[in-house]
Length: 340
Image (cartoon, rainbow, N blue to C red; front, side, top):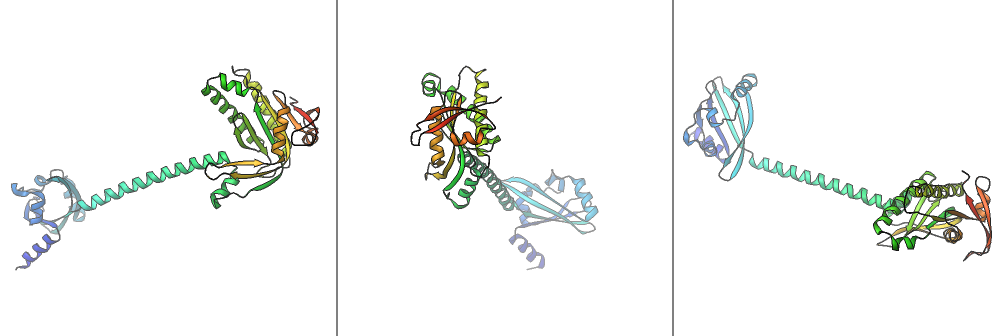
């Protein structure tokens, strides 16, 4: 076997198509069997432009003149499959060009698969990030941020005693009758608007909304971070709740009137439940605020004696008298009013 025959066998074995062209005329002088098989040259296309009509011949000539080399890719249908072939032109002699062709179809398919996989991973990553943000937002609506951080890090929340704090308990007058007589969607929409406004007001004074139960709204000052003037913060919050409802009632057909109770003392805060868990607080201050709210008149704020003593120089406070508070000793309670 001659050297030429051996080289031809090697080139066929490794799947490389080879052709020789006249540099000046770009006419083929030699094509191996692999080349012939790929490009179906039974028509005996003798010129490069005839075989590859999409090639820009002037660009090929310019690149060969400047660097002695030109590379490109072409794709074409072969039976039912699209082949991608890499073309590599090299000046082998002053008047001879060597064209080496490699089948890179599989490489291109793998690249396409990798790109698709990368896009899928990126899309899934974005979706996971979005879901994580939604879960985080939901949990931050259920518990204070510091409690959430502890839960995220350790998977549990250690019950904490907070002492002292001030608790605000609010409910609406005639809410049960309103629910029974009004369109449910209207009631829920308005309740959502009001609670959203309450949340914004509470944030201004450093209060942490704990939960809502129907028409009951509970927020706390001094939790989770201690606040020296927690009583003042909760009083300002309560006054602005009433002020907001008063202004809102001037322009809305549904009149929302609240009763508010304020109390200071100790509470225990923790996440309760395993599946449908919620952050909640328990303790004397919560119970007393709930009882005091029952003594309030519509659009009035009732406070315990200890809170009244702290706030008497900063707010208008009027004694309601001695009352028997369920679960507590008889004590004097006070009405807090807006000086403005």
